[in-house]
Image 1 (tube, one colour):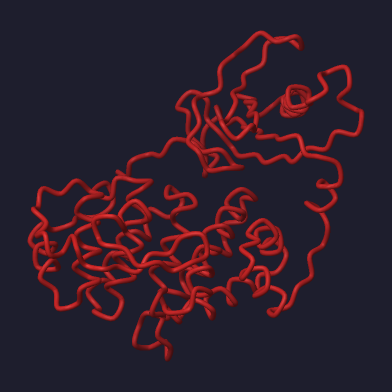
Image 2 (cartoon, rainbow, N blue to C red):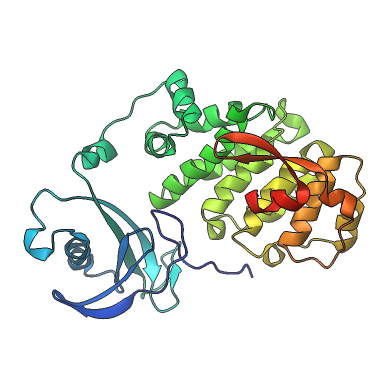
Length: 324
């Protein structure tokens, strides 16, 4: 069985502690606070969600409960949640299903921007991508499904920073759809990307594995069935680098051994691969999964392309790991 992930904040993605029943000036409330400033309130039965939502607004009000109506704007995100097990619920099969409300107080004017209709064409979208405006991209993606196709088409050229930005943006788009519980577009996109990696597709998805990895990373428990399929694509040499990069990314959030079997002998063979970047990425993957395989010094000194903050930089393998 796949390892179950701790619920994460629907605003920043950090793992959160279970909400605790706490006595407040508005009474007993089951809630917690994320390091990003979001407050999350639990309604454990699913039958009193209105009360829980009001409690969340009162707790989030920066002016205190007496001034909650004085123009304070909020952004709200919510998920089905089981308090007993501290897990998000994806199939409502239990009578204990509740709700977890995340709320943040926003400054004046921002609330209208959250709900406004965002109409953009591909040229506008590229401008947003160039400027790393992931917040607008997230909002626009919930209204314009063409954005998935644009991201795929912009991801091919590894030497172009825009390609790396597109892959990063796919992660933001996936996170937005998970928060909105709009999962089907993500599933459809994964299917298209896997199809692009087959001989029958008529097109080659050179970096499809990284795009899929970004989608899975948004909420691995939703896509646990895809992880073994993604790993299997390494058998096609042209996708090996992209698959390794995707697995390295996922290893930051999940224990890969709960989902796939990584053969020690295969990793040792990849360390003597003819391609230096494959050697370097394999060394980093070994480190991430705490594989007990010695890494030769010459591999530690291989120069690897790494993307960070909109730029492609070149680093020795030994220093690149913290960026992947």
